[in-house]
Image (cartoon, rainbow, N blue to C red; front, side, top):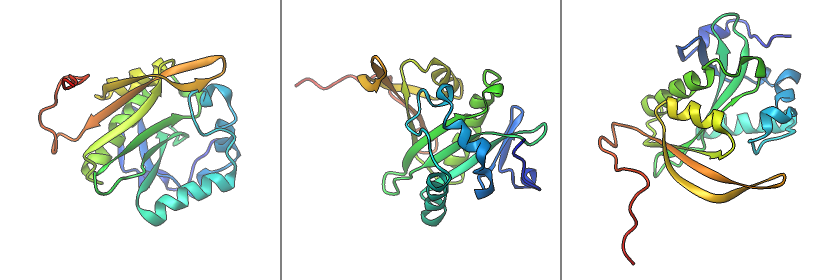
Length: 198
């Protein structure tokens, strides 16, 4: 069954590239949603696996109560189908930075540019609505699809951490990727930064 909420389109906060973002609802956390986190292809490069409805509800509610985490549903313009999520948070108020994590749980819609569109929309929300100075994400070196989606959305590879992630059969590097709010950072250095002489 397609996950659609009555009037969901009316709560859209941003739209582009065939998708729109709207605030995630408790009613979005249904069996279809939970099945994404049992799908080995979807969760191959995720820390969240086999979550329960209680886990997902607690995660969503904490953000709503603290205003330090904002969850958005990624929905198709054509049919309003909920196909994934974007998380902005957890916000570090003093530094005004946070992670931006994107998950497209419906594999029928991979490879269509929706992840890049969602990242662009959520990046603009983070900067323009929440005043975030810098966004971060960590990507497994084997997750080339995510790396392409973020870099096509204007993100930069800031660093590479060798053998940072443990996976079945070995380890993978971590790409530390970032996007800087131009209102705070009009000029950026070249990455990787040159280390001081010691």
